[in-house]
Amino acid sequence: MTRTEHGARGQATRRRRRPGLWGLLTALVVLALAVSVLRTFDVLPRLTNPFADREVDRGAPAVLKSVRDISRYEAATGEFQVIVDLERDARFVPDAIRGERTLYVATGGVDAYVDFSRLAGDAVSVSADRRAVEVTLPRAALEKPNLDPARSYVFARERGLVDRVEDFFDDSPTDDRRMTVLAEGKIAAAAEASGLTTRAEQNTRVMLERLLRSLGYTRVTVRTADGR
Image 1 (cartoon, rainbow, N blue to C red):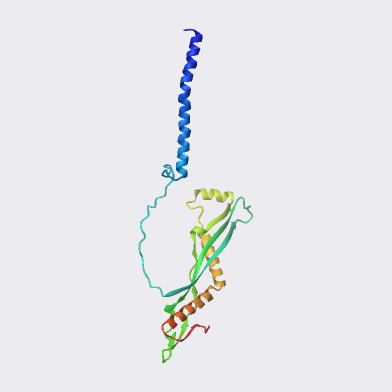
Image 2 (image 1 turned 90 degrees about the vertical axis):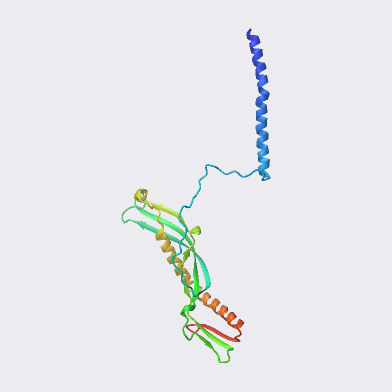
């Protein structure tokens, strides 16, 4: 076979192969467009990533340890947010070598309540005609702050070189229990200064006045233990 004949046969072979390659590319483009359209109109099922991480809770179910009766009227609640800026350093050592500073943002709620179990024996006085009633309530108190873990977080943390090395060998290098305790103390102080207990006492008085009037009493007096 001459070189001219061999070249002509090769060109003919390439011409025969090209339609197959272009056909495959065309089929892939059409398939991609079809999948895009079907996904746009939410026709295809949504496929999950088989290599995605998953979280499995292997803990035991909760166990009831105790039950106690509560005679409290939760009359008001307040939500607070505080920023704890805690710095720990060593004397005569630069912060870049030894020291730590943490900014912690804490959000939590505090409930104010009136404990009806603390009512004195003469706390309720009813008139002879049973038309008037007088109730003397104990002062409202505050529950312990309840931090919201979903909205409480470390905003920033700076550590010196020595602290970083120590944290590498520590089992819990980012133990923020100290930050939680400080945040709870700040929220408790803010709740004390916010007048939340006064609001709770007012709400309790309104609630009892409406309740007693619905029972038929026409003259209702509700006051706190200090006479207010």
